[in-house]
Each structure stands twice: as structure tokens, then as C-alpha cells.
Image (cartoon, rainbow, N blue to C red; front, side, top):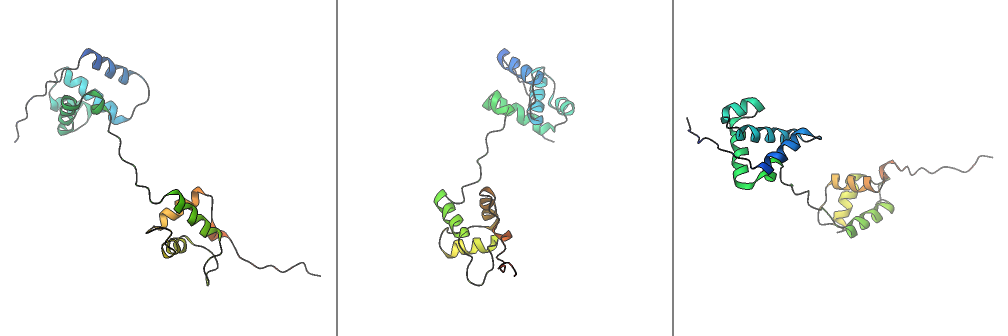
Amino acid sequence: MRAYRRLHIRLPKRHRDKVDLLLRGGIQPVRVILRALALTQLHDGKPVAEVASNVRLTPKAVREIGRRYEEQGLERTLHDKQHPGATVTFDASQKQRIIAMVCSDPPEGCARWTVRLIAEEAVKRKLVPDIGRESIRILLLHHDFKPWREKNVVRGGPRS
């Protein structure tokens, strides 16, 4: 079994005040509250196992909270860092060209545009190097297009 050194976390007054304010008011994510509770109990000198039992985290998670506080400070301990968003699939001009293509007539032999057909044609016409159906679906959704619902029905004039 691994012997861990005891965590000696000492929160300065300004950090204690900030944690107390966080715990007293407003809606916060559960993980932020659990981290704040773990920090206050570690500050009170409780052992890791007891803190883990009290806040229903694993001892490893409590040690990680303490380690993160020692190395990176209060803000980084309480809050997760921002995660990068998804990469941009295509730029504005490519979007406009795809929308223009969808506004035109579908290819020969097709009654209407489908999401799969739009993706295939966009790559075939070299509007984009590669694109998936989901990206096309979201693009059409943002522009309120539903080309697969368009019915190209020829109706006769009024009967005499």
C-alpha cells in the first residue's frame, strides 16, 4: 500500500472568505461546491480519507484538489479550465456557396436535395475539401432550409 504524505492546506484569509462566499450564495456547479468543501475541510486539518468520506469523493480526488491548490491557486482549483471548442469545419464563403447550390435545382436524375446529396455534391464541385452530413444538416438548420421537404409537383391549371 502506498504511503501518502499528509496534506497541510492553509488557506489565507482572503481565500477562506472567497470560499465561504461561494458556499453561502448563488447557484454553482456541484463539482465547484465539492471542491470548495474539500478545501475547507483540508484547511481544518482533517485527514484525506475523512474529507473524502464527508464530501463523497475518492481520496485520490481529494489529494488532487489539494495538490492543485498548492500548485495552481484557488481559481484553478475550484473551476475547470476552458475547453477548446470544435474546430470550424468551413468558412463563411464556403457556407454561402453551399447555400447557393442548395437554392439551385438538384442534379439531373434527382427530384430534390437530400443532406447526403448536398454533402456529396459540395465535395464533387470542390466547394469544400471534405464535409459530413451532420455539418450540412446544421448549416441548413441555421438557415432554416429544408430542401428535402420541397415537393416538385406539377399541378394542372383549373379545370373547365
